[in-house]
Image 1 (tube, helix red, strand yellow):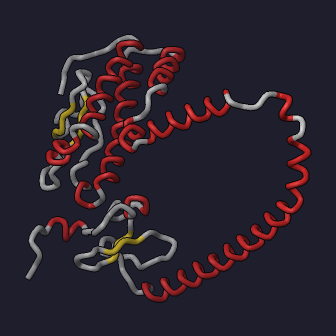
Image 2: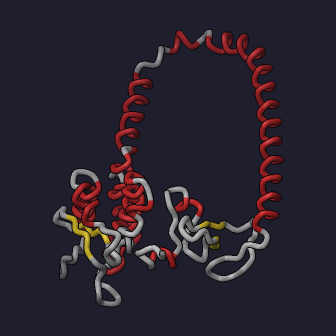
Length: 268
């Protein structure tokens, strides 16, 4: 980790941002195999750092408190084997984007950027694709969509050809409206059936888990709260008690509760 580097102008902060961003993108794309190997779940909390020199590093968090600069997301290595690689990389990319912004605006606050400077810095940053967009391929997709829209707008017919368009649309719209109404009725009926099925499932779930206790806090099961079951000991836990959200749970292939995670060897 670098020390004593302090960009003071908007241009210098933006240059610092671009260098760190390039390093992070390297780690998550061209150097992804090396990055994956360095994020060993058996190690302590690890962070991904990007440097102004366009290099990256996986390392332990800074020991001094408070740190000289904002710190990246802590413990990225722990989730590596619990989800698909592309989802894990996307998660690291999102946290990397957050860290990049926090570092840039940390410098802005430290060197007293005024409103216009902060706005100019944000606009310069916003013109670049995010790390997440680059890693997931969304940046290329957006570029293709922009080019196709510009090509489409340049090839629009001249004003003469537009004169008959409303007439044609009027003829087609009447039968089309009837079809659309029928489709809407079917969709509403299907939606109603789905809602009834969901209510029945919730009632069944409450009956089934009514006596279940959270393995962490010991409270009873409640259908309005998110629960997750450990695949090893088969105990149920409130999501909030083990810090697992529904969104995070979708990417977990096999969930291990804190107790099972700490016991590396299974009991006989």
